[in-house]
View 1 (cartoon, rainbow, N blue to C red):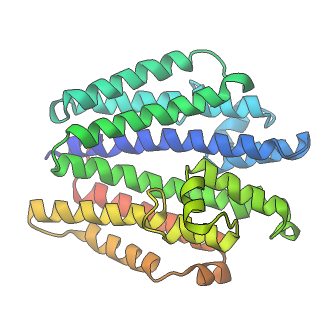
View 2 (cartoon, rainbow, N blue to C red):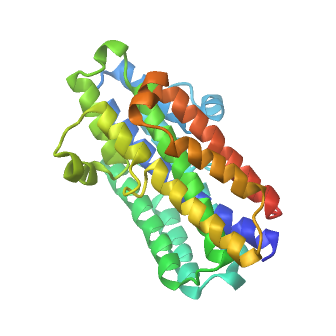
View 3 (spheres, rainbow, N blue to C red):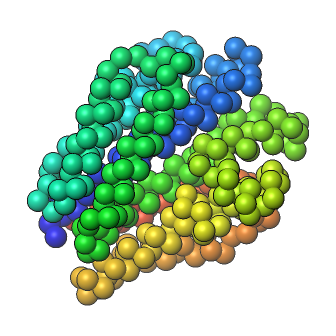
Length: 314
């Protein structure tokens, strides 16, 4: 496969996953802001912008962190290259560039999603319709992924798409988790309190994990148990362990198809071993934030290695 096509598939699904996860991040910020006074709520929205990596550009355009300003900046601001509206546009642009290697079902799903989201986000989103906007982003991204899973051959095309998807998902799960202990909790004195437990429950909801977690843990909202589930439980499709299992599998399929392993595979093995050797007690002893920061660095290293080894072309 041409590096240009691999690049298009990889980034098509990274952008799709990023759009959905930004929607989940907005949902997290909104739920957290509802529990705070107006001053603290602004701090929460500021932390969401910081976590999304948009703080500098946001502050150039907006002087305060009010909820409606923040979620509209992330959802639809034309000057924000990582707004959800622009990301969905990038998904469609990349899909068009690789139109000759994807199925008509996948192309139609992408095109329909673009038209739906472009129409929905044409006007400012208010608090009344914020929930509908978030739900629509998640629904449309699910439709696109379902079209890929239901119609694409399991070849290098599929593998590059999935690697992009799960690299982005792992990154965003780690960042949403990092919001919890490094940003959302107002003081260490709240650790173990009812506020602490409510925030962990909100994190589960934002990752679509609440019901699955309750099935496995009988409703126990204990911090270490939740972190263990979201980081190390390979059964949950947004856990870091699950994402790495999928990336590893798709990289193995590429090595089999192309007849060789590359530097990427070594980078993946080392990162996967560090995650596999971790346990939740060790993670909390050394610091959840520090663990997640190291994970994000490893994840970025994998992405860069894939781009270099398979000669992606912008």
